[in-house]
Length: 417
Ligand SMILES: [Zn+2]
View 1 (spheres, rainbow, N blue to C red):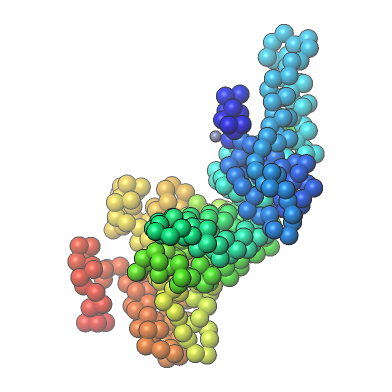
View 2: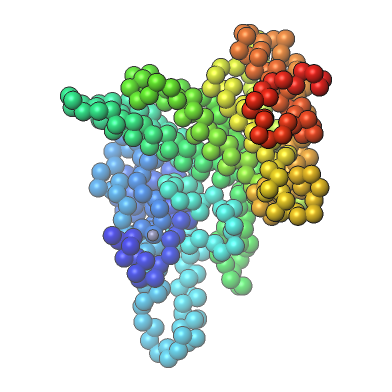
């Protein structure tokens, strides 16, 4: 109700608010009691998923409420300014009041023209000043929750397992959401709205080391199979088959976000403008590739069913970048011959994207070829051979069969090679 009343007072959403408290304070009992876990009720920062049982935060303080930003912004918008006859007369005073944002970050609002680049400007985030830290704590809570799902939903004789299925699905959505906040750090800018006369820039690169840390976190936690969600006691009560798909869909959404074309364009531009201070797009792509295909370096190569699906997702997404669907490409570049050039993701796709992903595929092909003789089981060997063929098809789309018969054609490319 407070949030909706905020809208009637003229407030827009302030999705940046939740990132303006230091991440460590979000689960500090006294801080949260005094300041709330987000400075504004106008953020979508619903419940404090960062707080841990051992923090002993009062349950009342876990619920979002009107925060210091809301009080400050109401004052800015509504306090009478004595002596002012016109709106222009108020300007000097209002600007003076706004400057309080310089010293108190928690009074700040989303930055204009940030175009989705600010990792703090996130919906459904808590503690997104440091999404790696906050998501790691959020994951600890999800793992606790996972163990409670049965007793919380399936306790009454004669009832169905519908609630269990629903809540299990919601747990995976939350997993996906929190992982997505980490992906946003890559190619990101921390930003603060400023006017002429205020010190410093509006957009400041997220330090390279934090971007590297975010990719490492995702490789280790999102792309490494979260085995704790795979409880047979739950899965076997929900459906006969579908566990791999569930994990796969959640991981696919995180990978899609991480490999987003607008993000890649930012990485290219940041390197062009900031040089070695930027996170290199080449390094980014190589780290993601090596993380998703980390099994290949082992003396004996074994890729399990979850990871085989994940690796196929990688090829799918890269294929869409290297060979964008004909209709999307035609719309973006009407005159471009056969398939256009990397138009997927709108006008923001960098012209570097396609060649750089092709280079990734060539590097991957080398690792896959070297790994095939080391395959520890038949599934892995068949997978790697399939991957080798798939990479060849992506790199040489002339040999792609016409779309309607693609599925029926299966692996029958042997004759061509
Ligand atoms: Zn709203």
